[in-house]
Length: 428
Image 1 (cartoon, rainbow, N blue to C red):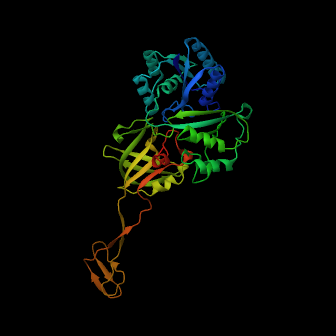
Image 2: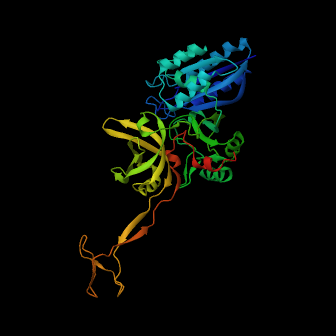
Image 3: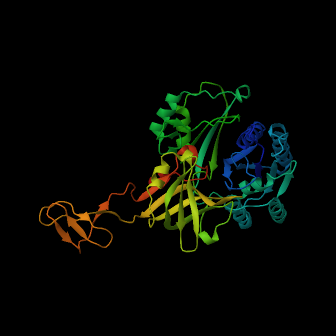
């Protein structure tokens, strides 16, 4: 018996389909043939700032244990599934499939996988690495999906990972409004949170397990363990047929895309962690977006909380020049727009004290003194006394924000962004 790793990517489009569904159908087809799939398949989210990313920017992989005589069957079933389901007619859909026979993933393939999550990788690099490690590749059209397919095979999911259970709709329901019982989702969240997360936007009550695209996914539940997502799935009441259910092991919700950096080192199409001081008070620009400038001693960069982040913007509005903060987000750079960090999380580390001036009081009558002009002192209109050396009082102003960590709501959260609830509840 031997282990054969299979990777697939770039089968979807904005019009429909889903790479995870292609993977789930391929796995079901192989299991019906008696092929053993080892462990949970992997769902790997790639660099969210990559310019050619697919809709969800995910690749999948799974491992089968087979005899050499079964290998052709596995390859045939996988390739036929991709041919029949991928959105080939869409120009931007360029699937790639990888087959890699090995009991151990080499270090260079693991390093490559991490690079695809944090940086920009071109097709030529993926093809060269595939030749180096001896992976068999299949390109459809341009075959750009090879980049992610190889990364999904190589990703070790060693330090942190989560799980996602995905329920897929029957084909006759694709493109129609999704029908699940909202009250069952509320109950599910109440009984399983925080072992499952991002089921709801707790600020608005908005259900977040159902996508808004015409893809085969009915709902997806994210959690800390297979047991947690399966329990949650049992609680959700679907009001339409479910064709297939698959549990994926994934790098979602891990912050793997973020890399510590300085402002002078940041590059477009990456996601960074920066620490510095607020260099300018936040300003609100047309559209309701809130911007402030960060200075870390190596340079300055604008940081933006966009309108869809809703109440998160109020935290940003409460910052003042001199506050020390840590920001996490993607580097956005477009012609005519200053380089900007699209905020995902914000930690307020230190708050500068703020004061307001108050005129001193008359020592005789206690009334508030009046200023005589710049550097001319104060006088009491009631007593007729003049106090040339009097100084205004500095009264502390209560800040509208506190030290702590804050995040955008689930509706704006990237798949890879680690929710703060995962930081708080580390018993998992």
